Length: 112
Length: 114
Image (cartoon, rainbow over all chains, first blue to last red; front, side, top):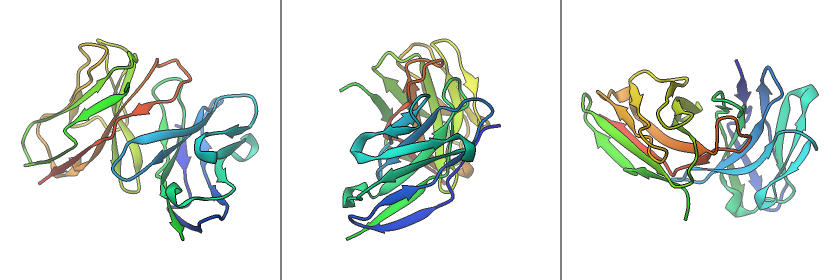
């Protein structure tokens, strides 16, 4: 069965610093991969998605992610973090049927 | 603004009571989903519906039921609530089961069972 692992439960970075959130997946076929962001008290908002083609995908709010099949990874990056990026981030795999699985999430804290 | 509406936003419920969480979408999406979100576990799929008139079980369906009488509405019912069902519940939809489009989420219902 497919699964998603987000190794980091909580990450703290300084405002203006770079960010990388890790995501590893297990999926039997070519995966569809997603990153979502959740602000407190709200639902999940899509940041970016990967289906095929270029392995480096650009998303909203200046985020990007790189699909590495050899490492079964889909890490999320941002060159310079803003205080408004503080939130919970979820990686998800699947998509073509009803087997979408979410990671447990990484909470991002941004220091002034 | 098109999207998903969930009601209520929060609820405190006595154990043993029946509760229905409402979910309505106005995007004419065929597929709809119910998840529960628990700390350290991420989102887990409870039930889904690929199209009006059909439903299916997800990863954690026990204690929950759903119906899909029309395209827009996908209510989730707890027949007899138990404390372990305390959670935040999210409804989601997407264009089609076979679509590569992502899911759209509502803002959630925070449910506490005492």
